[in-house]
Length: 361
Image: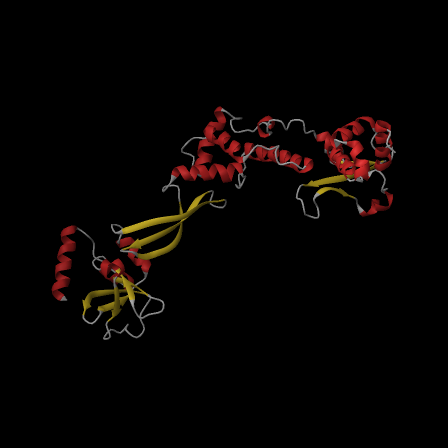
């Protein structure tokens, strides 16, 4: 040991390295030894007294070792000797995290499950680190921006900007979400899913305008600080671009936010979710006004759903009668052009107008 100590001091002196002023602890000593014994580390099998070593070798701690009866989860051995089986001699307990800093030249990294994280404002992934096939890091969350910048940019645009899964104060972002919500509300009201453009259209909008080196919220903020000065409206949606062709005929007047009955103004809410209790139009009546609300008039529905209702009523007629009003949509259109909504109960008005049109009683 004295010879080794003397030799080490001489090497350190020649390299111009300082000598520790404090005595080394267990971790420091064994980390130093690890630099020359990386192929002699092992991970204990859960159900056996064996270790999986480098390149999938299998060994056990030699019976003479103090660790034989109570082996650690990870070990390092000074030598591997094969007799009746492969034994590890002169064993010591180590922690897998000690290996990574001294094994950079042997490390292999793999990544899985890249995903957008709102809190981080970036794409994160799970990293696995191995040395000689041994997982010294099983699952560590890492920023994915340096691994696959192109994918990070795509996921940032899709999740943060298109889906709105981002906490930011940018004005364009709030305005775009508000405008999109208005179109989605119109879809609920009209019971359609073909008014708002698809996510791919919105992705292309951002993709064409945002710099290619924007791969996270931090990168975007830095880029937008300059870009917004030059073109403040660069990323603002226009309502026309959010509405698919052929959907412009949907009018807010057909889907009012309130139902008026005399002097009463009752709030309406819409939900397009067939099968749900709240599917359709809901009239919200405050309890103090309940005794003032009359049943009459509600059967007429809102203007936007009135045609659909009339068609359903005509089709519900007995077949001998129904065949006089074919096609039902045409008669529904004719009825709506002739009748005065809310003047009479709906069924009375429908019966009267159909009789006038066909003479059928």
